[in-house]
Image (cartoon, rainbow, N blue to C red; front, top):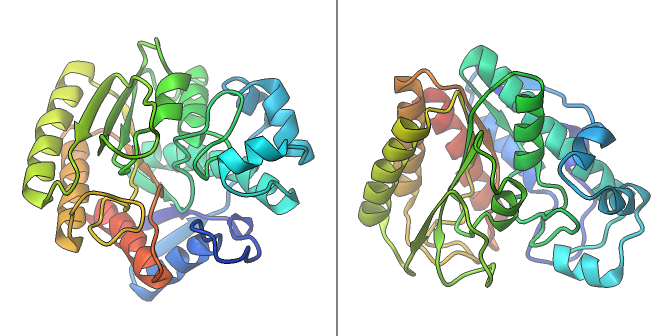
Amino acid sequence: MLHVVHHPDYVVPARGEGTFRHDKYARVMDALRESGVPMKVHVPDIMPRAWLEAVHDPGYVEEIIACRVAAAKERRIGFPIDESISRRSQLSPGGTWLAAKLALRHGYAANSAGGSHHALADTGAGYCVFNDLAVAANRLIEEGDAKRILILDLDVHQGDGTAALTAGRGDIFTLSLHVEKNFPTRKARSTLDIALPDLTDDTVYLDILKRTLTGALEDFRPDLILLQAGVDAHVDDRLGRLALTDAGLVERDQIVSHAARQRSIPLASTLGGGYGADRDAVARRHARSILTLGSS
């Protein structure tokens, strides 16, 4: 049984023709249902404000909840903050936390949103509002659900917000594989950063992933993995600069899933980036990633 966390309010009304399409989450769920794989959908609650404020600046949390975000900050985020975006931004961290709780029980679970790895303490950036990965990891450790968490970021862009928000913590290990010459221009320092050249292909990428993930798991020995499973590493992605094929993305997720299962480490995934004119193709990549992680 595939366990997926989803809320109808992840999807908000259409907002023109921008790069970030707010109907992606609905399309991913449609693709999952069309696969015919048995699936149980779990509905998250809004992440409590105190949990958000444990990681983010309380003033910034208030700006998002009250929908009073300065224009310059909205531009950095990439879209305006209204009530529907504010609500989704509070639901998505709750979804990642719930997916992790389900993974601890079932071995694997997915949030059909999340992966907002560019969000910093006092601002969002790059289509990210609240950093669900850092917020969920912090809460899980605070509640005693996990002692050591690996945040594995396989988005094509560096997880700078996650790295900054968890810097100096011995109980959270951040591992980011990303393109060196891509957003963000100024990188933060993860526990381990692997900066790749443009057009890195399946063979090179998968070899690096296998070696670095194995080393991180053996050295850090986490009892939970939070995966940012962005599909913008695909060769056709509008904002990516890597050259992974569909088969390469599948093998990427098989490597992660196998490594987790081999060591009996629960694995929870979030959606992350994926951009392109063919929105159904992007949604199918996300859905295929969830299906692969759940079946490998």
